Structures are given as structure tokens and as C-alpha cells.
Length: 468
Image 1 (tube, rainbow, N blue to C red):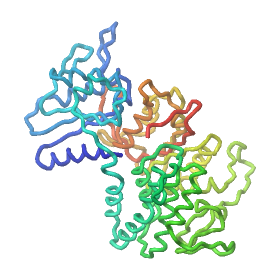
Image 2 (spheres, one colour):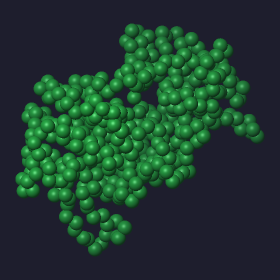
Image 3 (cartoon, one colour):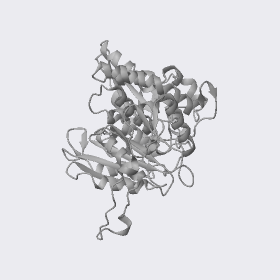
Image 4 (cartoon, rainbow, N blue to C red):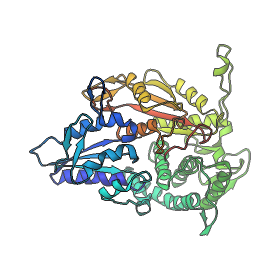
């Protein structure tokens, strides 16, 4: 969350604007094996199979008369396997030597950029050959992201109200969750089920607000209710049970609103409901402009004798809440991950939700991860479900959206350098919307109209910590 990608893309856009055309070739070296990266020579037949990186490297180093720059961006973890092969390119020789004896010189108009989170596995040989720029997340923080988001809102009135609400709640809550600071006193940090940065929480908050604020809202009290609901689904979403009550108490204190404890009346905007212990148990219903308890919104279970026993799902408060959340995220086309202990019906709820979607506009793909899943399995699965649209664009049949549900996302084996290969591939696919063909062509394929959902258990017992 330091803004590394933003710095690099700003540089490319600025150079292009100043008349120096800049092309960026992004790849994640950890999304494939070293053989697929550099190519391999068959020892018996002496057949040469080209690799993704060697192909890009040869392509960009062709001489050109145009005034342009070409950068290869390695957006992934550094490990001793793939980066040591780059040593001869990074020192004064500037030569990439491949296994078939081919040598490619790095030209004046080309450069290599590495965008990494840490240099845990890099050797001094690699570090001494690179110029280092440390991008500290403390310098950027989350304010610029929030400003960028509010500036996209159409009404000036709404921008002012949202800014006021942000200043009222978010900095104090983030201090409480990340640092453990309450009222200037240092306490203990709140435990979350997956590690989250402050920027990550604010991004989630804006995503939730995008989903909730469908039309302009001028009434400050109503807007505050929506904002509170978004806070509980973003900053308070990954907190463990003990942290939730502290979070809830602190929000209620910051809001300084009166509480309605009467069982019969529902709280209106400007009041907080107090019938149930926390605000997690309530949903702000925009149509009637009241806080409704989730237990009143649970649909009645109607038994149908035709349904198989395994497919029976009795709706509860939690499944209703999760269904609502999945619906909001699918509506604004945003990926979503459910994290929880095993047996909390993550898979059952999601599959139930997906089955109810209209088959005319959605195509479903369900991938179960295991410890043997490789990035190739996922790529083949995705490629089998999309068709060619134009030269390099692929997607589901026109007018449809492919929803990919990945179960047990943190199961794949972690290599000795701490990376899960399938997740490295997904990272590139989510950020750039593209992956590299691993057959003969080696081209970059852009995948359009994809939606992602995932479920994963807590780390431990065959499940691994996922890279934040």
C-alpha cells in the first residue's frame, strides 16, 4: 500500500505525454516455473521451447528508429531461482544468455523494473546491481485514495458530507484497529482474521459506499446511516468476535447519537438501535429509512421434498447477511473473499447465492483448490471457459459474465521462497486483467467480463497464510 504501481504508471504516462512513448510489459515471474519463464532445450532432440520472458525480451530489444522507451516490469516476489539468471543482464555486460546459446543484448531504449514487497530472498549479488527506491506506506497513507474517490462523486453537497463523516470516524477507528490507540492512550491492537493495511480498509469502505449509495442523498442523517453500515462491512468486517464489541462501542461513542431501546419501534436516521447488543445485528433499510434487525429479514424456510439432503440450506441471520453482501459486490462487479473457520457455511452460502443468479447473464465456474493446484491448472480452467473475441481479447459469450468461485483459496503449496504460484497468477489477472499464453504463441491474453469470488479457511492445518 505504498503506491509503487502508481509511481511507475505515473512515470510512463508522464513520459508519453512529453513525447517519449513508453510501453510497459508487466509480468509476474512467480506465476510460472523458471522453465516457462526462460525456455528449455530438450537434451535428446535438441528442440528449443521458448519462454515467456525470453520472448518478451527478444521482442522489445529489436532496434527501433522511433523515440520510445520500453520497460519490463517484474511485479512479484524476488527469489534466488529466477533472479540469479538476470545477473548478466543487470551488470555491465547487459546480455541475456539462454540455454540454446542465444544471446540478447539489452538495448539503450529498454530497462528492467522490479516491483517487490521485500528483499527477503535476494542475494547481495542482485541487490548491488539494482538502484533501490524505498516507497514507504507511511508517506502516502489512505487520505489521497479517499480524496480521489470523493472527487468522482457528482454532487458537491454529498462530497462535503462524506468528507465530514470520514473525518469524524475513520482516522480514530483505524488508529484503534491498527495501532490500538483509543483516546490518545495505547491499548492492545484488535485482532483480524487476515492481515489488513489501513489503505486496504479504506478501499473496502469506498467499495461498500459505491454499492450502497446508488442515488444522491442530501439528508445528512440518512447518509450517516449508510456510512455506518459501510464501516461495519469494511473496517469492522475482518475483526474477530472480541474486537467487534470494542469496535461497536467506539463507533457508538463517536457517533454521539441517542439510542432507541424500545422493542416495538425501529430506530430512524439520527438514532441508533439498541435492542440487540451491536450494530452488526442491524441493516439500514433505505426504502423505509429505518434500522431493521437482520433476524426480521431472514426469509422463511419452505421445505421442498424434491431437494437432496445435502443441498438443503436453512436461512439464518449469517447466511442472509452474507447473501446481501455478495449481492452488493456482484452488483458493482467487485471481487470478494469470504474468510472463516471450516463449517461456517462459506461454500454452501456462496453456491446457493450463485445458483439463484440468472443463467441468461451469468456463467458459473467453480474451482476447488488443493495443495497440488498449480497456476497452469487455473489458467487451463479459465481458458476452457472463455472464447476469442478479437486478436488478444477473450471472454465468456457476449452479453454474459463469467463468475469464478475459488474454494479453499489458501490450500496451494507454498514454495521454499514463500509464494503460492496460483495466487501469483491471480494477482496479475486481477490487477492487469491479463495473463500470458503458455502454449506456442506466448502472447498476452486480456480476459474481459470476469467476476471473482473466493472462500478460504483460517491458516493452519494444511492451509497457508496468504500474501496480503
